Image 1 (cartoon, rainbow, N blue to C red):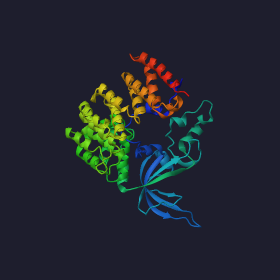
Image 2 (image 1 turned 120 degrees about the vertical axis):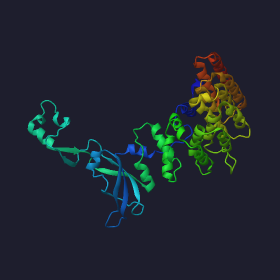
Image 3 (image 1 turned 180 degrees about the vertical axis):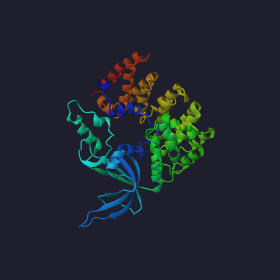
Image 4 (image 1 turned 30 degrees about the vertical axis):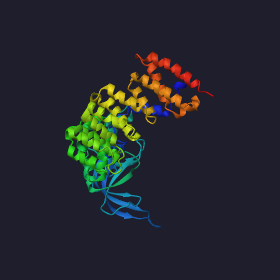
Length: 432
């Protein structure tokens, strides 16, 4: 049936409601902690010698390991990866001697059989793996057991190699050495990263933000007692604060702010230089709602719904309503949220997203609004036939809402099913 055909856009809009990380943070880069978990070992090393390649000698860089950050002790011992050890890379690094680098390394697959190093062990020290052998195995003889117990052969990869390197400052080196364990709950780890969000070293500040951006809203919320509102206000007011951080900072001020911070957040929604709605302003608006709730939404929504507001601002309001619905429903009544979202659905640009959001909320009371919008869309597109118009309008979202409403067990299901028949007839009349 025609009303079952949905575009990728609708599927994306539907699924987006279940992706619950930090609500207004852009997709974060991999944090240092995440990168350390992906490699087999990592160290901080100091550059000693750089040689550019010549006709007779290949390029190389020699470094001395200063600190080890992660890695299996046995593997690192076998590969001679320890503080003070020299390591040579087969290419010339860009940098001066004395500069620090973060080196990531791996060793080969577990099926490799290259002998890297042999460790002697006391005759009287055996492990279950050394003494337990399959029945009938020759290894059960006393001579064989003694031989194995005298020397334990460690077989690891054919080689250990450095796969990536990153120039770091001495401040970043200290930061890396003190990272909280990745095994700790994220709530506990965020309490440590909160102190580094606007560190003067951009690599540290970016890493702390990445940890927050990857956290869930509940985890971010748990940091509220540690936040300093004065500092966060200064970060928000700074015109150089990027949109990826602005959204987070708006949320954080909403968590730790005082009543007068609500007016401050409204003042910061627009760029003072251009007057345009700030990218990242959706987080500022969410912080405002955290502080003001139902009263604040009723006070500010008319401005966003007015003709003077642009679609960027309206979209920000839509994102905030979805955030409240999913994470902070006690801030406003469901009736107020749905009423504002229905008004946003009247905007042609926002209509598909707003309508599918209402469907995800299972707000079947919006059926009358959806029917009205559908009839208006069909009337305005009189010059197009049904198949053409489905491809260029918001009809697919309106039809999908109606189909889902008809399939739901609600008081509006019968009316939705009846309207689907009417909608099909309307589109068939538009066929050439």
